[in-house]
Length: 86
Image (tube, rainbow, N blue to C red; front, side):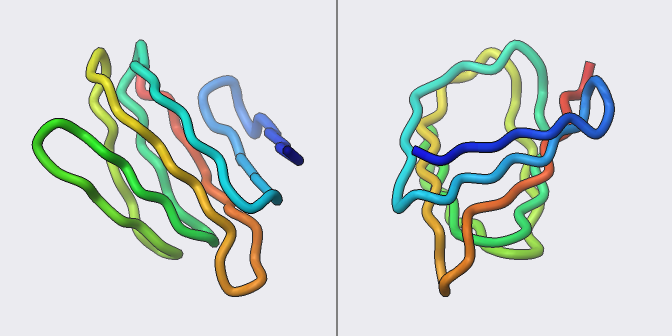
C-alpha cells in the first residue's frame, strides 16, 4: 500500500492513500476533525454508517470504536487533512 503522511504541525497532518482500498478498525485517543479532499471514506459506527467525499468534514469522537474504509475515486487518491483535537 502506498501511504504518505505529512505533518503540517504536531496536530495536523495530510494523509494520502494511493492504493485501491484501506480498512482499519480503530479507537482514537483524541477527537479527530477530518476534512476530505479526494477519494471516498466510509466510517462504520455502532449507530450508523457514514459516507464522505471531497469537501466533507467529520468529527470522530475519542474512545469509540470505528471501522474506517478509504477508497481512491474518480482517478484521484484518497486524501484527507486530519486535525487531532487535544
